[in-house]
Length: 377
Image (tube, rainbow, N blue to C red):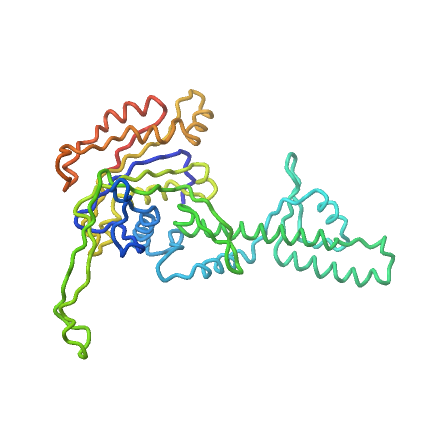
């Protein structure tokens, strides 16, 4: 895989629904989600992430490094167990307190193969395996038995408090190591993050570099409930039930807008790479076509405008830092993308009912502040 991305990104994503239900609300009989004060439709960030996960699952066959952690029918704890088994024979590098270093080095039964790294300008690190930690315990116990017959002052042991601290540091470091394994193998973990701090084999919590807000329709929507009938009866004991059918909630038409954020800083922590970024863009442009359902056959991606922070400083180092942290406020960039209805006297029924977005104007305004505007769709 390629290295972690070096630039911060924001993006504006437009998608529409025609006679479908983009995101049903289970607390409202699966009616389309809606802001009842403004009448505008809503789609949750979780709903959009689910579609991205499904797209990656389909296109990458759920194979590492593009496995999906939050997958239908999967048991999350089993993935955590896999992570811990995978790192079982690896060493853990722990930064430990100075007083513990002194005490540990004075320990007579200092095990072979367990080393300290104490480079200039760095705090001491203990490089240790789980087997090494158990070996410390065994030798400390043996010395304790020996000290009953020998002079206690001449036999140095690791104190119970220090040993407990060592084990605590090791467990914490092992969780971080397991979290790194999860990021390496699961696309959605290194992209969206995950809470993996439950169960016996924990992998900690990870903040993902890619985040979405709620999608909101440009104009108010009117959710409609459609009644349907069936010709087949459910049971031979009650043949008259064949005329009773289900009800389906739809939005006649709605154009939705969502804002997305990609942090270069958090990308370096999960190693969200340029390859991952390409897959994300592909998912946003194609995921509705790969996620067919009766309620979503009328959903389509219509526009994807990406803002890539590139920097303006002549100094290359400073420019790279600007690209990573950003050169403009996100909400100011979002304000450059105006979506407006052509005829406000009648409800919209297609994307063509909206004015064409002036991308040339967006591009000229953004480049002046060190941001490259890209029209992906």
